[in-house]
Length: 373
Image (cartoon, rainbow, N blue to C red; front, side, top):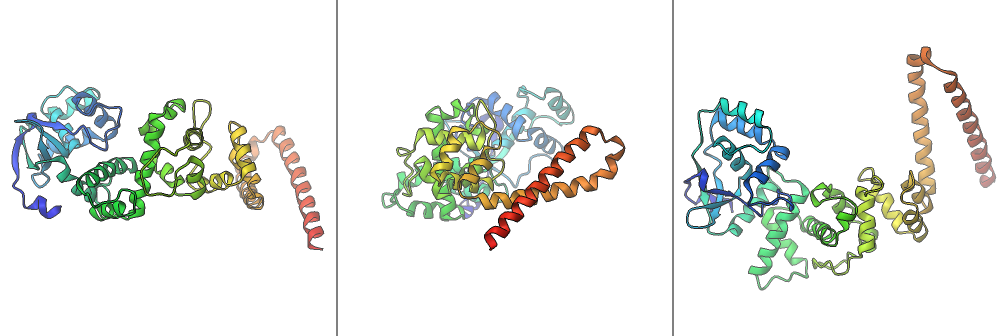
């Protein structure tokens, strides 16, 4: 793909004839990609568009980075690669900013005027550019986030299946082809696409609405990490086949998983970080602990309690001992700095802790000696 780009002639095209890509993987699904104001508003909020404007105003447009475009109609073009730059160019050329008016005004005061034309490479069809986007944004220097990668890969997946009669979408072959196209690994490609399938299923079945989330609110890599686990995969009905088929997904269990990962209207998430997914998987793999989690999921520290029931009692006990030891060490170091401000309530609380610690020690020692004999 890079050789194909290098062999094409650079053309200069008027900025007024350049349009945003409505299929841009970085733009959330709930934003109209054909609406300039909506796209620029998003880019100003999420993509540091004002910083890029400052660079273009002070240094001009870098001729070595042409926009990659394809024809829209007789005179206009869709910018497939370079939508952020297009947003900055439109603002420099006088598009009314939907936000940050004072910031944009200050930048434009340093400008020498509009940038009317920019270098572009024209492709006949949008699909011709997809392979290059993979190298640049999935394995390249301008890496997209996981959700944008997955949306891009879905476009490439659909293109590959539509154009290649010999490709079996129900085998690993399709993922190997996509991985080769973008310089990645087939299992990574499969995981991203299946994660997107689960997310789109949740969106289409109002699961996201019920947990008060939008697709782009989701920390997507947490979802893809979780569905790598066989117990979690089985729980939501994501089978081991290579087909991107959501028909077997269980709606209730999928909603449970997403609410555990991201929270819902009534409570926050119970997964604090990605390593908690292993605890969740162990809970799901045990009938009793899963039932307890499902019934009491709104309770405080429910993950730890359900994990204890999953057979992780000793692991949890050891982890708690280490945490208590660490807390005690921190308190001892902190004591000299707060000694003048101590209250009787602090002493009373420490006395209770001391008694409980002694009771725990004696009970644990007795149990150890009893079983050792």
